[in-house]
Image (tube, rainbow, N blue to C red; front, side, top):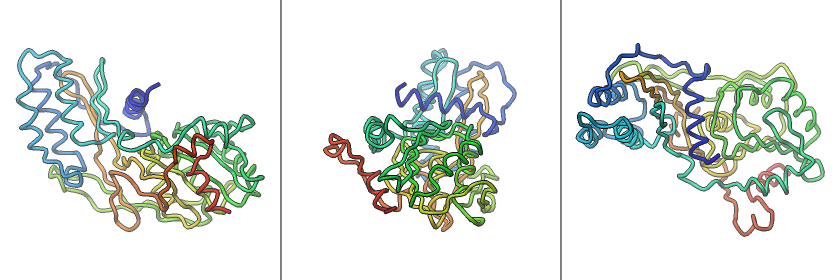
Length: 336
């Protein structure tokens, strides 16, 4: 599946999933192009959380795209106009969904993948790897390091899986948790995993939501804290690997990891995506979603456009030809 199609399916999955509650307006019966365009623009204007942060003049977007809407235009043409307007936000959490198309801004194309999956499989995971639910893992460096590949947050992570993995690598000097090209998913998976790497409650981020119709009408910041699991925990060094394809729940995971003393983030800047998406339904029945909250790190910084790693390391193409992943090697050096 291509990157764009995968992200589109992911966006639709999130839109319909129980982990992100969507508030739907009662469906009307208007197919009038102007009415649907204006409705979408107005909903965004009142509720979207990142206009100021992104420096987007939403009134200017209406001036730019409104003349392209006319009576009798096809549904496909109307979709393309509204999708192009939403793309101006450069936000992977902003989508328009119709029966025939989904508008998606491909955040992961803003930077290199910073990973070659075949190199990882052949030279680090190996054919003798263990597959535990959504995790693939193996020992590295004569069993001194544990390596775990986790490409999505499927919402199916459970205690049996985590107990098995952490018991398997309990005698290692450190653990590598590779979430490069992880486009997100169920945020509660991130909490379940990270609760295994702490011994005390940790303050991990703050968040605030829109409370008024003005672009900067936000409520008070609320602190989020992570509590340690009562099951098996691993409190030695844990290195998280990221790249621009690390998005949404992947970015949240990285943000929380940076707040934990025994965790280090190595690789490239993530794709961001820290806003909680919510949405509704247009008069013609199409649905939409966009971010209605902001998330800040423990120091008050907003990294919606991408969270930088603690140590930036990019793969070297010449080394990849030799089967060497520079990001994994940097993580091994960090541990050993």
